[in-house]
Image (tube, rainbow, N blue to C red):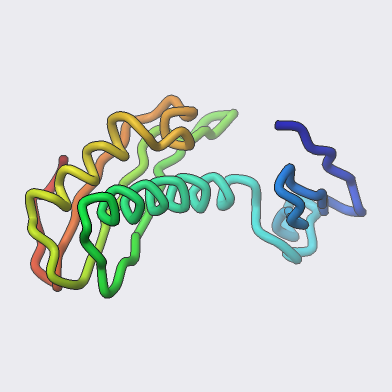
Length: 141
C-alpha cells in the first residue's frame, strides 16, 4: 500500500487512501489544530474496531450465523510519556440475535489471535469481552 498525505494548513492533513477514499486528520486547538477532523490516534481506535468487526462478521457468516445487531466499544489507554502510544486496548463486542455463545467466542478468539492485522500491528495488550442479547459473557478472552 502507498498513499500521499498533504498538509492543508495549521495541523490539518488530508489524502486519498489506497482504496480511493478521502481521509482528513486534524489536531485540537490547544496544539494548533482547528478540530475539523479526527485525530490520528482516534483513527487507530477506529482501525482496530473496523478490522476486528469485519473479521467477526465474516467468521460468523462462514458459520452460517447472521447477527441482528452488532456494536463495539473500544477503549485505549495511552502512555503518559512521549510517544504516548497506546499500551492497552479493550474491545467489548455486543451482539444481538440467535448466536450460540461458543461460536461467538470462537469468532472473537480467531480475530484477536489470528486475523486482525490492525491490532497485531500495534505493540500493546489487547483485552476483549462480549455480550449476546444483553447478557454479558466471560470477562476477558
